[in-house]
Length: 461
Image (cartoon, rainbow, N blue to C red; front, side, top):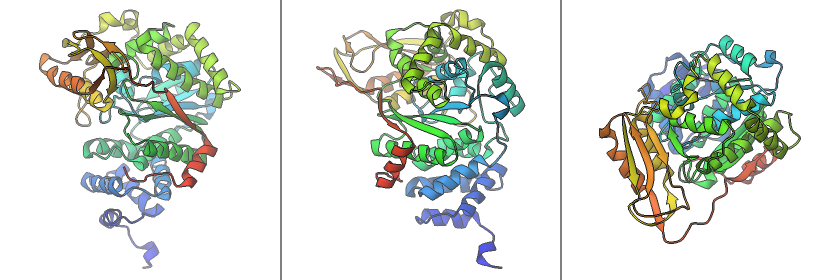
């Protein structure tokens, strides 16, 4: 038997990656196929993930991993819908609820938004967990059901089906449990495998930077953005990546139901000051989706169209229609505050007077998770009513005793740790900090490829 046709043994691939070797496309396909079928034990997949995290993945490995994961199961084709298929994906943040705004906004502008999302991972919340705080909302649709909802409402936010990118379902959960989330290559393959399997024409990527990002190092975040744009464009999907600020939670709420409630406020055309950054970022992202989808000549013109859908109510109507098509009960939308029924509540006062100079947003994410809004292991339940409502933001001047945040937990015993994490996450100053731009850079295909060619990347976390 020639070496070329010799059987592949998983342990040999683990050793090769452990020793900083480079895996071939067939070897990566073997790992992905084994993950999808269950033929490779979880401990071996975990060992591979840790080796990849420690030693990094080469560009060819990342692209092979992305394609193999995309092809590990069924794929969705939106062609029969007769509209341009666009989507947005965030690398994860605290209080990041833009999906609930951009999906109905883009749908209201005549685009199709097939959005395959995930659950809570590490210190970040999960889009699906938030949607499931709506009574009756079904995130697990079959592909025919997915197509039917899209045909009816223009947007649909769903989970991966057992047959759609099954390898990522396994590896995604393992990364959360093995401390291997923060890897550019693994993040790229996980995100793009789902997006490419949805048959997208266009994709807008929201790559987080700052203290709440998975990749806090800016060079690594830029590399991830360039890598994803280049990889998706090579696969035929027009893609742009925006580098956005996660040095503080996005908007006022971080949790599950309370994030849905905040999104509804903006969809109704209201503009509370505490949610202005969420509103602005959602319009910027939606503007790019509308532009890439051919409904506006420029992203700026797309922003204007997006803003119109908030003021005329069309985005809100599409959100209602999507929720109802997924089996969700929109009755609580009439009075979101009345529907909110946390097991325990505590207002946290400021321990001192001064300016909030900085926030450790990752620590704040863990605080949200510890209220019961997130999970420590895959499959664990989450509390739809747990979370944190922030009353003071970075740059605010706060007096001693003034409310910093309100904690909502499953029961009173879960309030102490989130409060300690919250207070320890804040850096105080007698003077205000310099402002941080909401969007600091944009990667299109030319700038992404130039960045990768420049060698300004870090393959290791």
